Image (cartoon, rainbow, N blue to C red; front, side, top):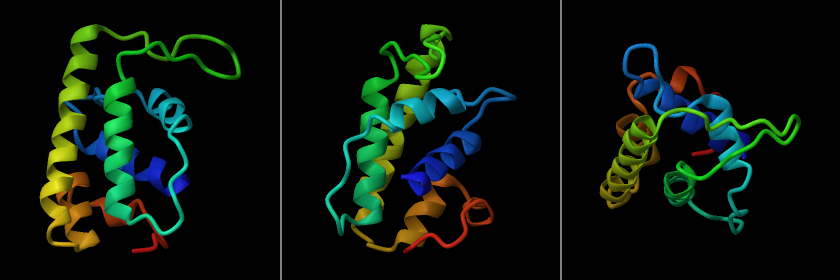
Length: 124
């Protein structure tokens, strides 16, 4: 799960506009911790796509910090809609690159060219 969170945070950093990331990092974590557990042996591309689909479905729902009970999704609907669109575009890119079945190409295309410097020992 931690590798998946890290990959989505890399995507989030890569797709920022100015200083704003599409999704706040903590909000992204809260949503991903609710992601159903994958079956053993699920391919990285499949798991990554599941995560993007799940987050795109959850982005407009209320989310609270489990520690404090405060809202972590308190940014405007325009930003959430933009983030949702970018998450869905990532799903489409994953679908296209799944045909190639090369995880490194998929990660490079979806997460950006510098993804490797943020992820060490990722089982590909």
